[in-house]
Amino acid sequence: MSDTSRTPAGKGLSKYALSGLVLGAGGIAALTVSAIGYRLGWWQVVTALSISEWAAYVAALGLVVSAIGAVLSRPGTRRRGFLLSVIGIVASLPVVVMAMQWEYAARTYPSINDISTDTEDPPVFWDMPNPTLYPGAAAAALQRAAYPDLAPLNLGVAPDRAYALAKALTKDKGWEIVADEPKEGRIEAVDRSLLYGFRDEIVIRIAASGGGARVDLRSRSRIGRIDRGVNARRIRGFLSALKESAGKIKQ
Image (cartoon, rainbow, N blue to C red; front, top):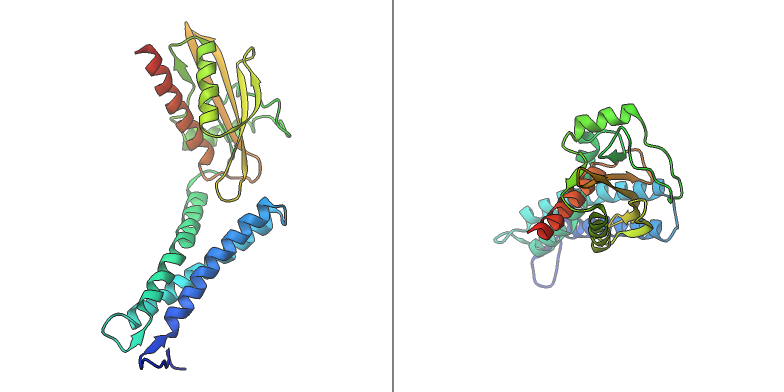
């Protein structure tokens, strides 16, 4: 079968270029449908992730086919479709890159989804739908090996001030506050992932310590057995921003 279909202009349109574009667009469409369907409750997470896996395969094929089309239809050749090939590559890349990042993270980060700055006495979830305990010593050992930098944050401000700063930062990040208990020094919130809206649960514990305040944070994924490092990054980001906010008060 020829790679081209004849057109009135006299130049053949590369079927690789056209097919690659269709496949790239199909990958994006499948990923979008997977996420929308999960958010609307059409299917469970297993189905959503299965669709996203196939979306990655389709997009990867689209990337290869589009690249072939770009070579065959590059300027100076007898085939048309170079621009279609470039669009196909651009359409395929986001899905392929996302899939590669997910796979890399799944292989790189430990098989845990509950991270705490205090593994000996972790903050407790009291107001979440499933207030389970911290996984225990085995998970703590994996956490310490993977994220040795995670530790409580000590601030040189009063506990009530630290609480106010933490609450304000929680709102700034767009987290849904589930529990607001200033007398207990406890804030519970939910963060949602951008694409699928997966819910992660966060509890912030603030206590008096050495004339200032000690802040502990625990973040866990509501579903799944691994988090691909998301919870650790969330804790680092929050504590770094909180430290910066407290530092501005002291200046």
